[in-house]
Structures are given as structure tokens and as C-alpha cells.
Amino acid sequence: MRSLGSVVEKRHAVKPKRVSGPARSRIAAAFLFALLAAAASAQYPTRPVRLLVPNPPGGATDTIARVVAPKLGEALGQPVIVENRPGSNGNLSSELAAKAAPDGYTLLLGQDSQIVISPHLYANLPFDTLKDLVPVATLVTTQMVLAVNSTVPAKNLREFLDYARSANPPLAYASIGNGSQHHLTMEMLKARAGIQLVHVPYKGGGPATVALLAGEVPVMFGGNSVTGHIKAGKLRGLAVAGKKRSASFPDLPTLSEIFPGFEVTAWIGIFAPAGVPTPVLSRLHGETNRLLSSADVREKIGKVGGLEPFISMPEEFAALIRAEYVKYGEVVKAVGAKID
Image (cartoon, rainbow, N blue to C red; front, top):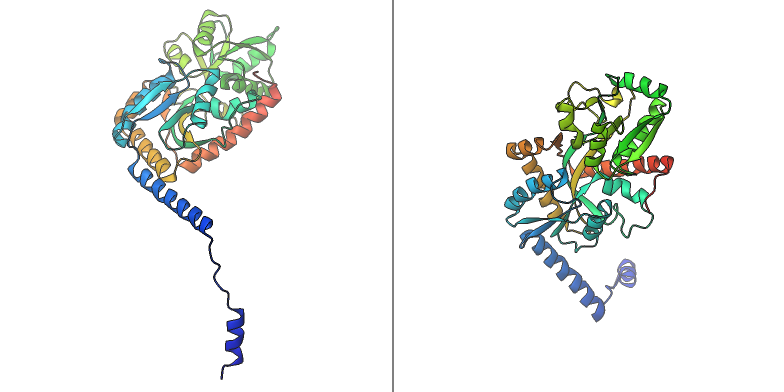
């Protein structure tokens, strides 16, 4: 005779649901896709990888690409081909990368301005830098240097700020373009120091530096374009904008020594389209960090006008991007900068 318990268990037992034919097909297809993706990731790469560069040949960004690409290609076992795709302040190369197949065969050498500033300047970008691109690895950083020409009597930052406050009409300053990091960094300094300066945008670091040397403008924030001229004594460096003092100019104070929390560091990193398999991203990240640790690569980077190798973990790079996206969004809004 069956017990009451056995009867209840039998009545309430959950019968397995039968999976329909179409559902079984979808599950099998998804499983097969996952297996194929895993196999492809394990074999990656099996053909050349292209590295999109947002600038024309010859500049600092292009030089870094041509230092990194051959070494990364050696590590991966396939060539990494540098492909210069300038246009629209880097947005052309960003769009090409964002819309590329997420297989690891198209990478972007991205500058901070492309990723965290451009989205706030352009109203109708056809991609989202935070959603459509994923950070792979940091490559280099460079200090923004506050530089003046020989006509400026100030010998240090405090003297310059006093000089700027008393100038009538206000002093002009150069930048490499409206909405550029050079422009926004000076606007942040104006707000913190309580000084008035008139913005004069130029088309690139070369023309802006030439204008500074010629005395067309007395001051600007510059990167590698001003480094050599400061070392040659043609320009005078007053301060750097990074978190710590620059290896190239150890005697110059940081702006944060006078204005706590003031920090601007320019960086370049590698990005990939969203959706690239994690094993592929992990390999690219690991190989990039290894090559940045080599003495040969570090020496070549050090020769590119004030650039320094920048090694980080993926979560650190992602956090940096999120923080700077918010910071520059606030500055752009306050300044009212916009590019149509």
C-alpha cells in the first residue's frame, strides 16, 4: 500500500518540459556559435590586423603607432598594419572602428580628445564612444605644459597669473583648435585662477606653436609641439598640468601644487569595436603591456617629445575614460564650446 507521502510526491512532481523543434534548433545554433567564437578567439589572429590612426603621417600619434604596430605584430604572429584615416578631428577613424566587425581585426589608436571630448562638441555623432568602442590598453601619456614666449616678463606661474590679471586689454592665448584639450585646459585655469584671457584657435599644434614663437600670442598650453622649443630656450615653461611633475621638466611645478585637484593628462590608447570576444581583448591587452615594458620601446617613446609609456589595467583605463568624459562634459558646457 502506497504511503500518503508518495502519492503527494507523485502528484506534485515537476515534469520536464519538452523543447520544440525550432527551440532546439536555436539552442543548438547558439551553442555552435559559442564554440566557433571560442575556437576563433583561441586561434586569433589568423590574418593581418589594421590599426586606424586619426592623424596624417608624421605627427606624434602616427609615430607612436609605428613604434607599437611592428612589436605588437611580432607578438601576435600577424602584421599590424597602420592605416592613417584623418578627418573630422578624429571622428572619422572613431566611426570606422565603432562600425567595424567585432572580431579584433580592426583596432583604433584613440586619443583622449576623440573619446571623452568630441561627444560633447558634436551634436550628431553617428556612434557612441562609450558604448560602441571598448578600451583595450593605454599606450602613452604626455604632460600639457603652460608655455610663454620671451616677451612675457613672468619667470614662474605666480608671476604670470599676476601679469595676466593686470593686463589691459586681456592677454590672448593659442590653442590647437576650438574645443581641444589645450583650449579647455586653459579655460579651467582661467576659472581656477580668476584671470581673463582671449582664446585664439589655430589649426593644429604646429601653427599654434609657430604663432607663440613669433609673438602673435604670448601663452598657450602645449604638448610635444612645445617641448623641444622649451628645452632649446626659445619658449619658457611655467608649469605642467599632470598629476605629477614631468620627467622632461622636473623643475616645473604642477598646477595642482597651487590649485589642488587641477589635473589634465593627455593620453593615447588602443580601442576595439564593442563585442570583440573577451579572450581576444585580453590577449591584445597583455601583449601591449608587455611591449610597453621593453627597454627598446620605452626608449623610442621617450624620443617623441615628452611622451611617456602608460601601462594600466583594463578597469583602470575604463574608469579614467568615464571620469574624464564627465569632467570635460562639464567644461564644454560651461565654456559653451561647440562644433557643427
